[in-house]
Image (cartoon, rainbow, N blue to C red):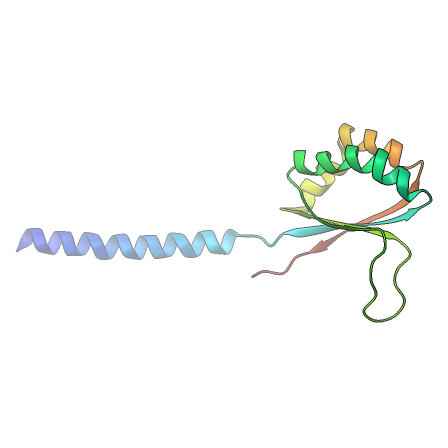
Amino acid sequence: MKTQFVATLSLVVGAVLGAGAIQVLHAQTKPPVYQVSLQEVSDAVAIEKEFSPLARPTVRAHGGRPLAASVNPMAIEGPAPKFRIVINQWDSVEKVREWFNSSDYQKARGVGNKYAKFQIFVVQGLAQ
């Protein structure tokens, strides 16, 4: 009888602790951030051939995930922007800053600055 009681109590305590741990881990999950680049491009062919092959790997190397890139974004309402748009997903704003300030990205930007003017900003993702 005592062995069954101890076993049952152990199962209940384990389940409660496990549920609590899951709640704590879930609460610690932060939503992603999205880095958006608007690029006013003067030479689309050169950007794709010279800048993108240098810049894209730097995003992955610093923990980012390329999501979208469009030279001619399609408008749903209002006029379409005249920019090339690039969207990358990151775990935190700190990761975006680390990538942006890295020597490998700055080297790529030296090439990109010849063919485009950049606006880069971060948008906070929503918690799921």
